[in-house]
Image 1: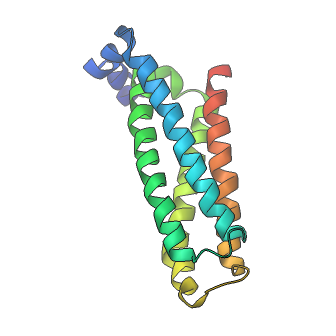
Image 2: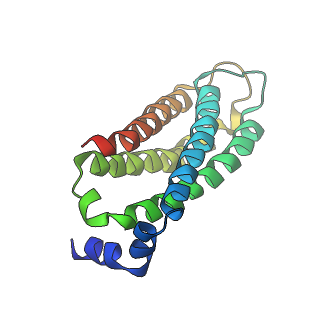
Length: 157
């Protein structure tokens, strides 16, 4: 807990609490990042679930992945800024802890897709995606929607 108190009491935490525009700006950036990330993830996962079958999988996912990565980076940076303002209190919030755990699950799903599922997709060209791809898409969609919901619920717990 000392590390979270230290972050809160750091210059960054003080600036975030003391500025009339930095905290709201970080909050707006977090929401913009959420919109970009959720949109890109939803489109990629829809493809893995069987939508947009006329589009070849690899280039389709590659394009949207770039947007997802940038939006996720915006989310991480803005999230750290928001967290630094009240780190010692937020870390105690059970919904925040659930959100962090869900992010780990989401990132683990990305790793499984990249290193286990994706190599097997090289031979898949058209039609309904294989079960492993559909499962990855379903887990991803459910997990990232839960992350977004948890993020919005933090203020209420």
